[in-house]
Length: 338
Image (cartoon, rainbow, N blue to C red; front, top):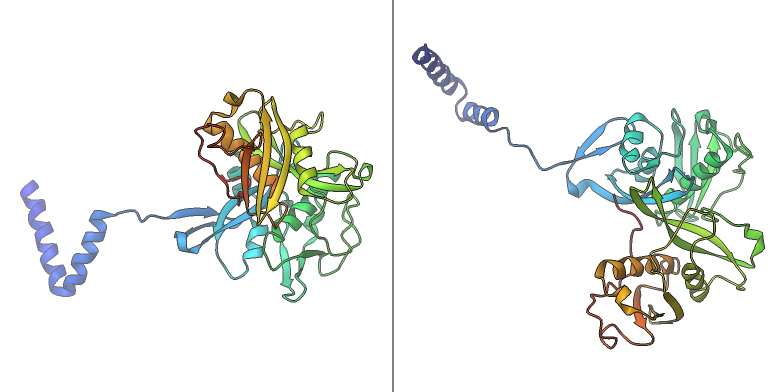
């Protein structure tokens, strides 16, 4: 029986060669080898797009965690002409997106069934107009609605050519959404994750604290904090960070207990942050030091003039303080990467 099957296969091969030549051999080789290409599957609202690395773009998208905080996350989405529209698609509620980000304790912002009817960007002013269908009104609460609006604005303004966002519903500008969130005028970045009364301060700063989902996933959370300073500045931002997260916020920092902030100087794009600890062994662990540096760097990233951060120990450099640590001086590009 085996010899008979082998004879039949040989006859088929001979006939194939006679009819199609080398092309038949290549076809047979493809059927036999079946090598998988190196690809990455990027989920979207409609289907799974298979693209190589050259067609993917690092994009910061905003989602919501279980405690109602907006969380920026770097995702890789397919590059396309309407990349800003694609970014919004990836924060819309759909079974695929919900399943994808629920694995890191987050959920999408834009209600299920929402469609983008139209979208335009004025390259001169940086105004992005987004026309949604009426499903954009179907948020579940006032908090969800406010987060959705801010999340859309922050996601779109991650693109350098967008400064403001104008919401439209079914082709018209509306004064407010279902729960009263004002959207009549173009919106810019402002007051993300407010946990205290902004009116209590003269100015406000954005500080990056840490949050968690069920104690399993950690992520950095930008929080708007009121201050008594006449204007937002580097010194005040770090003072707020080192004071720790607001009480009852459920947030925390990567600053170890016992580490105090002494001051900061900015020179030629470098922020020299001076700290003091009565037990520098706390910071001798490279992982602890890296986390603290990133927490400081993210907060200082809010100031465009700062490109690097150098940590000083009571006025001394790492080497002068006798610590065997590898400094990570560049201001972080992304807060959270999953």
